[in-house]
Length: 190
Image (tube, rainbow, N blue to C red; front, side):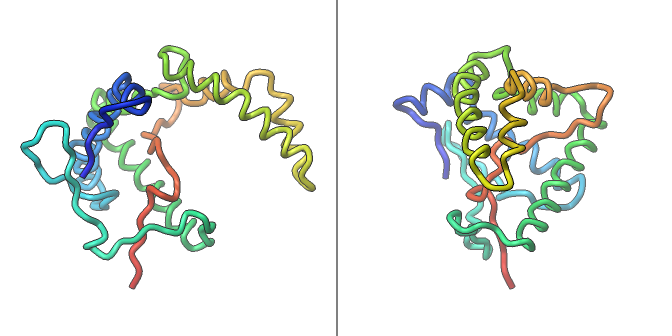
C-alpha cells in the first residue's frame, strides 16, 4: 500500500512534481499495456481502491518474490536477468510509442535531467559537486585515473546529461525506468 507523503521536504518535493499520481499512472495504465504488448509482468498488479490518494498493489512476497540484499552486489546471473528484463521494458515502450505516441510522450516526460523545470535546476545543483567528488576519487584509484580525468575534462557534464535525455525524433527512444536500483528489483527463485 502506498500513499503520498503529507509532511516535510518529501511531501513538498513529490507534490511539486505530482510524483505520486505519475507513479499511479504507471501501475494503472502503463504496466498493463506493457503486459498486453509482450506478455511480461514488470511489476505488481494494481488493485482498485475507493480511498483517494492510495495505491494498493499485489503483495509480490505472497507470489514468492524477494528483494536482493542491497549491500551485496548482484552476481553475473542476476545482472544478466535484470538487463534482459529492462531490455523487454524498453522494447515494449517502443511498441506502445508506435501505437500511441501521445501516451508515451506524456507519461515519459523527463523531470530530472531538464533545465526547463525547478526539479532539474535543483538536481543540477546537487549533481555538479557530486560529479566533481567522483572525478577526484577516480583520479586516486588504481586503474581508474583516466576516468577521473575524463570526467574532470567535461566542462559541463550536466548539459551533456540534459542533451542525452532529450527525446530525439531521429533516434530510437525508449521509456526510462526512472528509479532503477536494487531495492526496486524483485527475484523469484525455484
